[in-house]
Amino acid sequence: MSQSGSKADGVSRANFYPSPPTSPKSLKVADKSAPSKRITKSEAKSSIDLTETANSPEKPTEYDRPVTPAESTTGEKEDGSESTKEAEELDTWKAALSLSDMTCGATRKDKMSCENKISAKKMQSIDDIVKLVKGLPSNSSLEIETHLDNLAKIAHCHYHDHPPSREARVSHWMTVLPGARPVPSPQTRLRTILGPAPAKCTSVKKDGKPCNNRIGSDRRFHIKQTTNEMINWAMEPKEKDHHLAVLAKVLEHYMFCDVHQKYCYGQQDDWKRLVNKFRAACQQERNVSSRLVEGHTATAQEGNIHADRSTLTSPPLSPEGQLLMDNPRAYWDTGYETSRFRILGKNDMVDEEKSIVDEIRDTARELLNTDANRSRNEVNSGFIYLYQVPGNDAFVKIGFTGDVTKRLEEWKKDCHREPVLYPLPAAAVAVPHAHRVERLIHAELREHRVRLYCERCEKQHNEWFETSVDRAAAVIEKWLLWMRGRPYEERKTRSEVKWYLKEAEAKRLADVPQFLEGLEKAAKAAKASE
Image (cartoon, one colour):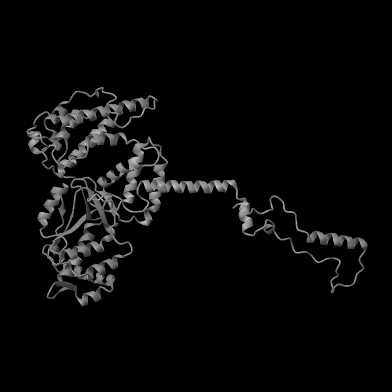
C-alpha cells in the first residue's frame, strides 16, 4: 500500500506507535493511608522529574517502530509480481492447449471436440505437467512429447485416453505451444514419413488406380510393429539388427492385400520413394547425432532430410536375412498374444458419489430394458461366462452372450489371445434376464474393474476385473441363483410391456449387505447339494 493509500484510510503514522506504559502515582501526592511525612526540596524535584519522564512517550527506535502497510518490503512486492506473472503464463499455456475450460477436448469420431468435464481432482496434476513443459527448452522435443502424452492421459476422459487419441492430441499440441515451437523429435519425424498403418491396401491395380482392398486389424498390428522396429533401427543401430531392406520388405508384405503380395503390378514407385525418403532421413539423423557427439551444436530441421544423400552403411544380408526377404511373413511370431495388458484405468467409469451398495440397489430396482438390440436388452435369456488369458493371471473377463462358443471364437480372432474358459455348473444352463445378471455382477465387483486397450483390435475393453477366479465365480453363482428365482414380473398394458422388480424383493434390497449375505449362504448351500 502506498503513503497516499494510508492517508485515504484515515490512519496516521502516530497511530501505529505503541502506547506509553501506565504512569506511576506522582510522589508529590501522598497516599492517604500512609502516615504523614515531611518531604524535602530535593526529594520533591526528583519526584517531578520522574513524573514527567513517565508521562512523556518513549522515543521509538528504528527496530521498535512497527512497519506500516505502506512500507511493504521490495522483496514482497517482487515475490507477488513473480507469482502473478507465473499464474498469467500458466493460464496462457492452458488456453493454448485448450484446457482452460477443463473439458476433455479430444477429437471424437464426428470430428467435434469432446466436452466431457475433467475432474477437479486432476487440476493440480494438469498444472504441474504444464509447468514442466513450459520450463523445458524447445530442443527437448522427445521429453516435451513424453510430458504431453502424460498430460493427455490425465486430461482425456475414459473414452479418449487410449494411445491413438493421445497421439493425435500431442501432435496438435506440439504446433500450438506458446513461445519457440519445438521441432518434432526424430522418432516422430521418421514415423511421419512412414505414415499411419493404412486401413486399405496401398498397392495399385493394372489400370493404375488404388487397390483399396481392406487390410485386417491383424495386418495393421504388424505394420505398427514393423514401423517401430524401423525407427529403433534408425535411432540405435546394432550389429544384430537386420538390414533395412528386410524391414522394408516385411512392411511391404503387410501393407499389401493378399492379391498384391503375389501379383505386384508395376514398380510400385510410390513405395520405393517412401523407403528411400526414410533411408535419407535415417542418414540425416545419424549425421546429426555424430556431430553432436563431437561437440557441435548442429540441429536437424524438419523437412531437411535431403541434406545428406550418403548411403547408410549396412552389412550384407545374412542367410537368415535372405530367407526373410523370400518369406517376410516369418519375421513376426504369429502365435497367440501373451503380453501383459495395457491398463488405461481402474474403477474410473462410475459415479464417485454412489457407493457399491447404492449401485446394486439401484440396478436391481430399475425396469428391465426391453430394447430390441440384444446387447442392451435385459429380458432375453443368455449365458454368463468367465475366462482368463495366458500372461495375465490376475485378471478375469465376465460377460454375457447367447452363444458362448461363438463369442469366444470372435474374441480369439479379434484380439489374438486364447481364452481359458472356466466352466461353471450354474452357468451351463441359460439364465433369464442375462444382461441384468451381468450388470449386477459388475456392480458388486466395481472396485476391481479395469479398462484395457487392445492393440490388436484397436479398441477398449472394460469388462475385465483384477480379482481371483474363485472370487469372481462366487459372485456369479450368487446372482445366477437369485435370477433363477424370477424376481421380476411382467406387466402389460395396451401399448407396452414393462418388467418390474417384485415388491418382496424390493423390500429385501432395503438392506443390501444383509441381502448379499443371505444370497451367499443360499449359493453355498446349493453348491454343496450338487
